[in-house]
Image (cartoon, rainbow, N blue to C red; front, side, top):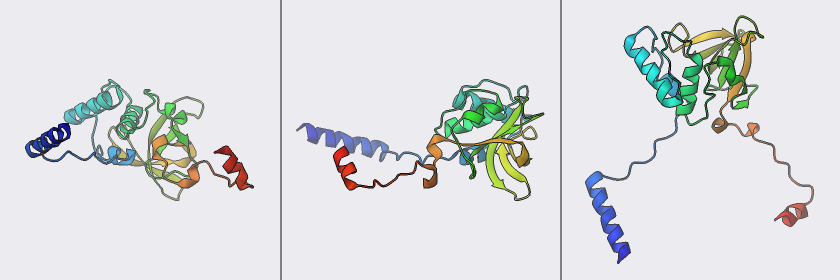
Length: 189
C-alpha cells in the first residue's frame, strides 16, 4: 500500500514538474576559465561580474580595479570546477596546490616568478599550450587587465600543478606492482 502511494506521488510530481534533472556534467578548470575570456577590469559590468565570481566561488572579496587578481581568478575557477582553492591572493600560493606535474596538459595551473625567483612575487594562470619556442600560452586573469590568453617565458615557471580531481593519465597514478607469489595476495584477503 505504501509503495503504491509513493509511486503515485512520484508520478504526480513527474507530471507537474517533468522528469528529474540529470546532474550537470562537471566542467574542467579550462572550460570554466574560458567562459570569462575578454572580461576587463576597466569595464564596469565586467568588474562587477569578476568581483561577484571571486566572492561567490572562492569567498574572496575584492575589486579587480584596485587589487591584483590573477590568484583570485584561479581560486574561483578551481573552486567552480570542484577543487579546493588556496584562499590566497598570492599567486605563488599555488606552488603547493594540487599535485606537481612535469609535463603540463591544458588546464593545469602554471605559476611564474616576477621581479626575481626569490621575491615571492608571481603570476598564476592555466596552461594552454607549449609554443615550442621557450614560451607557453596561458589563460589567466589580470593579464592586460583582463581575462586573456598570453605568452609567457618558460624560464620564469616555478611550478606546474594539477588539481587532485583532474588526474587524466594513468601514468600519474601510483604504479601497481604484481606480487612475485600469488599466495601473497590470497593470504592478504
